[in-house]
Amino acid sequence: MAGLEKNADHTAKTKSSFFSRSLTTHHGRPVTASSLNPSLNRTTSITKYYTTSPVESVGNSLKGKVKDLCRLFECSKSVKQTTDPPPQQKKPPGKSVLSESRLSPFLSLTNSVTRLPGTEDRIVVFFTSLRGIRRTYEDCYAVRMIFRGFRVWIDERDVSMDSGYRKELQIAMGEKVSVSLPQVFIMGKYVGGADVIKSLFEIGELAKILKQFPVREPGFVCRCCGDVRFIPCLNCSGSKKLFDEDEDRVKRCPDCNENGLIRCPDCSS
Image (cartoon, rainbow, N blue to C red; front, top):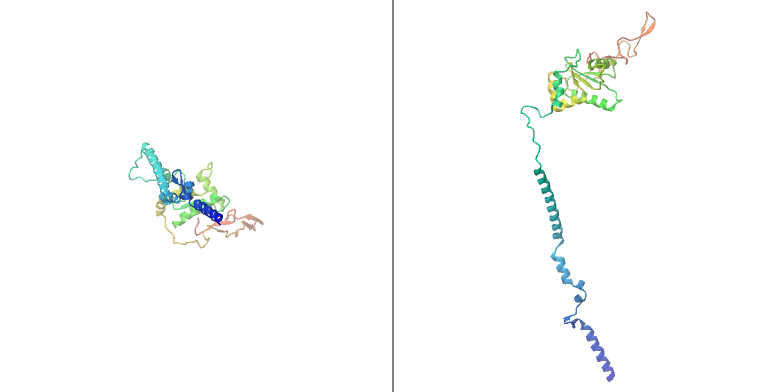
């Protein structure tokens, strides 16, 4: 019995010494879990986490970026201030802001050398209705729509419908000059092509020129030709052929063109 009691006392002492190790001293200070492993110290990790919040860190980074941008713009401003700006030419009062190159078509209208006889009282537009060349067709269509927007009567001459118009335009412009379409004559004087008409329309000079022409009713369409400017020949019905009873043979109709058409007697002359 005495031996069993001694063994029990020995085991109790060892257990108490084992569980009281955290209270023992090691080199003069208590040994704890935080001293053995610093990463397990929760108080220091919490204080580190809450001392710098993520909002503040993001704010600091944004402030740094804003400062860098401000410095960049300040540097560019300083460079611009060092370079002297070119002297601005003062425009004399009373003159248009537009360049003289854009006003030259309007000025050339009064001093035009190229003229179309017999058209001093009208606007003549030489164009084509064929769509073989897309750019040419679009320019012709745009010029016609600009004039129709002013509701003025236009003498439209389609060179694809009558070769006589092409010859007439070539003679007026000069036989050695390559002519493009469209071409516009106002009051018998040559104005220019699509670029000139568009520029005059944009700067408002075309409206001033067209004020002296009468305005038609809105939606006006020729009842005879439907604004096509041509009708089938009344003599040969568009066949271009006539039978001569005296000579007993077929002849070419003298009234119509190569397409068997004549100009509309109501809206074309």
